[in-house]
Length: 163
Image (tube, rainbow, N blue to C red; front, side):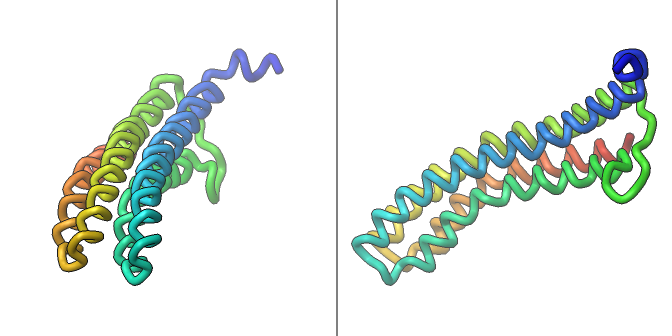
């Protein structure tokens, strides 16, 4: 037990793991919220027009990608630290903090964009309920929100590779 308290490399590694957890937890939470918004709206559409299930499913799936981005960054962090497929590396507290903060952009961008993309997808469900031909417009509107999740993912990945 004493080794954990006095060995700074274990604290550095703990910070890195916390960064991976932050990335996947927050991005995943945003996706969950967004998918639930779109799914609730989609269920109403499909109850009235079952033939629109395929289109509704696409709109509901769009906010799920933020969770994937968070997972990918967490995977990169765990690979970088040797916790997956190797021997864990010794990290100083400062190095662990750098890796922790690498997970923040994708976590926060994924949380907010996932939730808001779900709202846009829900509105898109209403749009296609009135005019199924507007599916392309509904997808473009929802995909615009995704841009910020992609930017968060890119920043996080670039920071991991730069450390």
